Image (cartoon, rainbow, N blue to C red; front, side, top):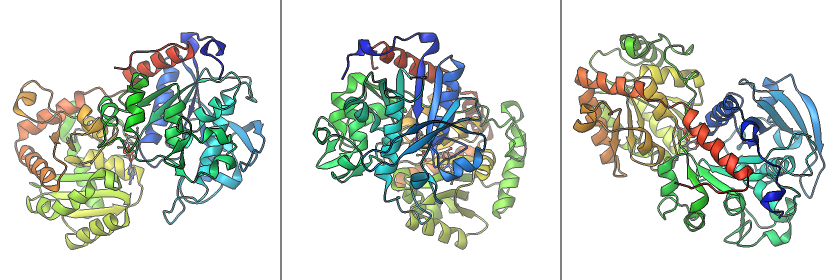
Length: 502
Ligand code: ADP
Ligand code: GLC
């Protein structure tokens, strides 16, 4: 691998960065990664970074972007087919490169799974192709005149790029790999190493091998020049056994190159004063108007318009990570408080069935909407009284920040980004004006119930509740500070130097 000095010289004002991701809102979204992939590059561009985005040309994405031109071709290699690079403009004005390979991406269903929810069987090749394209664009072999100084990879789907660069690329860009969720690692059979066009020698402990398998994420964590994750707390947690998902040893060994940078939120898209997707707009000064959203939400979901009953809500992937099995367990007690519950989400079939059954039993007090619905998500943020995120682990979490901005105090477990962004409604925090939600610690249904009951009590104390709402709405979760931190890291990487990781 050439030394850092052979990398292009950096000019901090016009750093060239290629941001590679498997999803980006509003084009293709399954979770917070899409929100980040839209808002962070836009914030970087505002700071003067010459940032461009690389995404797979999924069928659904191509259908939304009709103005595009072919700017490069990639030859087939091993079992990776030939592909084209298309250029388009994203909503934010950030230049968007789409990797067009109909054999891999022109399909119905989601980016990772088919319509029945099973992973696409060729995901290793689909995201190997994406990783390889990112690496090619970041090396002397690039078909483009524009060459990034830094390749910013996101999640396992692009984490093989540092390996492609390491094993044989000329003049490689520096690489940063951001972990959004360590639970997803891209683990495949060893035979795929050859199919992906990687040399046999890469299948080694200091390469892409992980306990006899090929791991995209391990490869990136091993070979990227720097690693980041999406909150300071999660950066610490993943170095331990409990949340390290087997990779804690490698992560601790690289801790001087591991940065925890809190995600920001798009404060234009998520703004109750201007949100076109909600029923009545409001701000901290006009919080009374929030009630119109509660009425609209209840009407839409068929919930009783009971005046003295708080409405709790969830918008989430339904997976083990999110701790919603605890919510299912305590839901009857929550409804008895009394309180109402509105859930929007999809994923685990048993959780879907459980919440749907409960809503059938209590149609006026509980509502379950299975599916993905951006508009309803906004109305829920605006119309609910409190938002629930009892996650077992949470790298960052976006909804607790959206909730605070919408005057909908979140009830969260103290983990990862939730611990970093929500301040518990304890007397001292109420007194100093920082309290913005309810935080519980123990990983159990009982602890969740304790926090929900505290929230329901606080909701009845109007002054306390108003203080919580106003404190949350005054919090500044915009991207500026975090985007500046990324620029700092890029600049050091491009110059081949090191930055303190704290
Ligand atoms: P994760 O990425 O782990 O799913 P985050 O809290 O970071 O969790 O981000 C989730 C994002 O996806 C938020 O923008 C949330 O509103 C959105 N979301 C999740 N489930 C749904 C759904 N069923 N319908 C609409 N939006 C959803
Ligand atoms: C992942 C995490 C979530 C984080 C999001 C964006 O999906 O589960 O906590 O907010 O990525 O970084």
